[in-house]
Length: 295
Image (cartoon, rainbow, N blue to C red; front, side, top):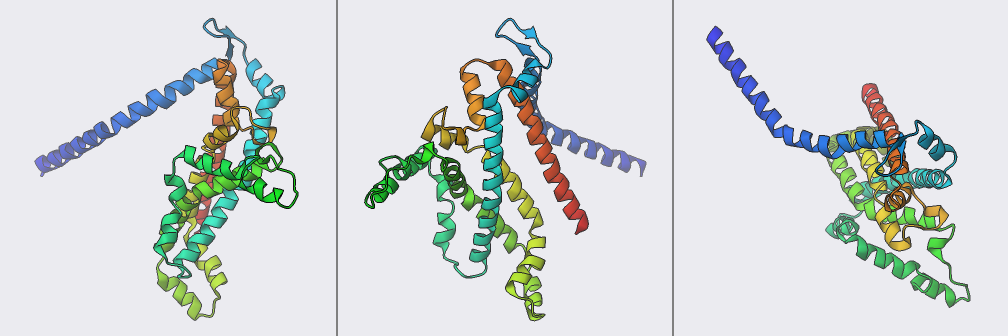
């Protein structure tokens, strides 16, 4: 009996070691590509200069948070974009997913078409939007027929709303697929039982479907936050590194400081943004945990 226990223990140890060996390359990659650069950035954020570094304490943080108008503007614009874009994206995605899942339209074409914006290369996407939004584009050409002066969409107060529309258009299909997967995982008997008891479709959705979709909704929220940080490519290709003040995001600030070799400011901004992102993720996962405990 004792020999059998020792043999089982050895097998368990061998399996654990094997599993760790498979995970080890990923851990090493994360350590080399993320942890070490972040530690170096943290150290650089307390210094100034290139090559010959000078310790300046918290001066970089004070200057960035109280005196640097470009950084504060980029934070404001990024926050405003996220507050507008992410909730709208989730609501529209959920509406369309429910629409496609309840039989209003089960055409395969619509489900496939949702993913087209993700498949099309970024440069092609930008060219299509420029075709519509340029000063001599399709929209301004249409407006000119009614005697309306051309609108410089990407250099006006409309620009941030246009970026929100592009963000929703680009990520809508991915979120719809995620929501449809969650909807298909809900047993139809729950909705049928509610409807037999006289519940309307809206009430069934609010009291049956939506609570059961919480895990999917939190995952969609997480992915939407991450994808909102990737919109920089389209803005940069459409407006360059220095767009108008309404669409100057944190990615522009980081990219411009990198090009200007201002590493101390770049590293300081990276540390601040990492802290902000960590706090947001903490509250997102805290909210998910509380929601699960209530259920």
